[in-house]
Length: 98
Image 1: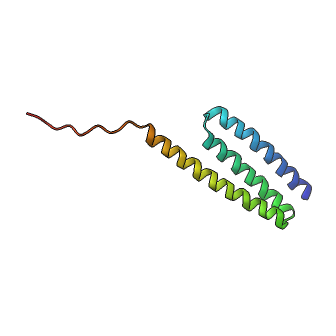
Image 2: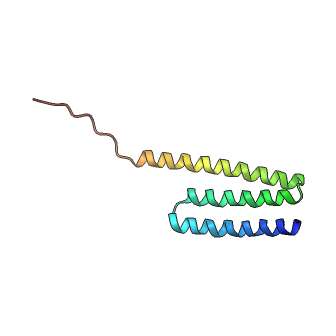
Image 3: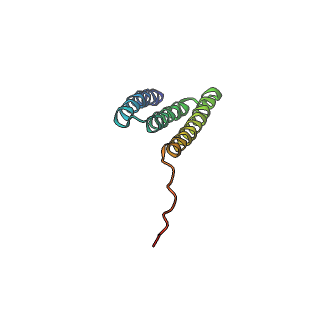
């Protein structure tokens, strides 16, 4: 069973890299690419954690979750700020003149 989980974790890691490359080529955007990569790396980390849950592996998985949350929040915020600054200023309301 440990051999199967170890192989599955390795395959998920390789699939994470391939999927992230495909997402980058398809979207040309970093936010969905990073999301795909970190989600799949988290899956691989959880598979490795199922093998032999040492404190080091647990800390590594917790660190990956922290990086995923911080990166996602930071990129969403940067995207929102960029979207606000690139929009033209609203024009003043028109008044009806007879």
